[in-house]
Length: 106
Ligand SMILES: [Zn+2]
Ligand SMILES: [Zn+2]
Image (tube, rainbow, N blue to C red; front, side, top):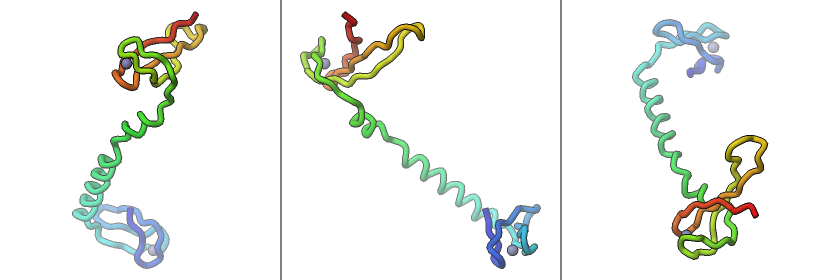
């Protein structure tokens, strides 16, 4: 993306030059600088990535006894298993040992 030095309008590429759509001002394209900009943007994107810790903390927990380690706190989430007309089942994941089990529906 390039903007006109003369009038500030957005410029379009024509071969090796940028041409202003408003006043016709031409500027030679600096291909080396464009490549540098692309590389920088790619690096910024990879730095943002890892949000998994924050998501873990945002998950809801409830008091429930883990059948595996006797811890009394677990993450929970609702999930529909087979057919769409069946009711959702609640699943628990122990905060201590990551044991996963489904709530008994009785
Ligand atoms: Zn212009
Ligand atoms: Zn456990």
